[in-house]
Image 1 (cartoon, protein in one colour):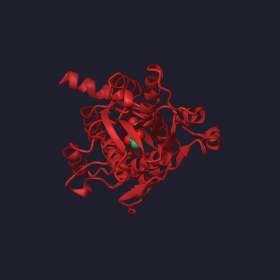
Image 2 (spheres, protein in one colour):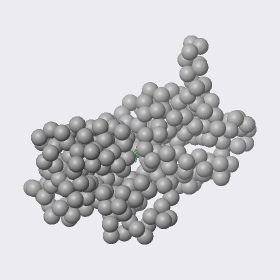
Image 3 (tube, protein in one colour):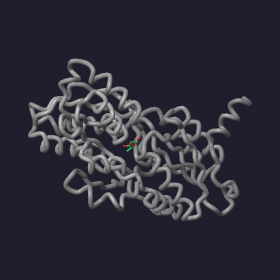
Length: 314
Ligand code: GYE
């Protein structure tokens, strides 16, 4: 019991403890996934900054990429009686029971960035995030155009069970389906991190099949940046021998595109704080909000990255 309590306290970092639920200042619990990527760090910053700007009391929890931690944080927020919850669900399944408890407690849940699979759609108010299937399709379209429809592809997948991993894979597969000479010859999860991206691809590149690849598709930039390192280490030239395409559009990826090593990054905008708080305030006023809010994004390659780089916010 005591350990459980300490664990709860340790998990939930109370950003501003002066506002208690019911005291006037609105309280929102943000059960973040972790800090696995540059995208995630920018997303955390955006939501924290916007909470401060609007005078909300934000309770922040970092689940360190573990669903059980995220569920524990949600239970804590429910017990505290927060006014609302922001949840980017790490995986699609397994959240139904805790979402039921939030609903029973009258706490609205706004899904950000990733969605969940639930049998009862009333368990969350809205889902704000990108169209991951479309992102995968765009990555495939760019690769098809750049390689003339001919590529032996290694795919670095995101975290197992995560919406962006499932949907970016699906979108890419449908995008290459019309090209008989584009083949995904290997795919492995590297959990959206740079270190695992490098490690997984490096091991594959040393196999006979790995020596034959001509392209890498990574579900996020961090894994792609790891892939660039792996390629360099085995003496293959990214941008020349092997074309690399990924998703997110973080600054380091833009720099790699400008340097000619990364071919393309499909943008997925993590700066959603203003949008999220517009929605939270609408909910607070009792207004109806759209069930699905899609965040737009562009495609960046050598043709347009240089002009976008100086003002890149993340
Ligand atoms: O692409 C990746 C992050 O869910 C869209 O999660 C997000 C993904 C993003 O770790 O970098």
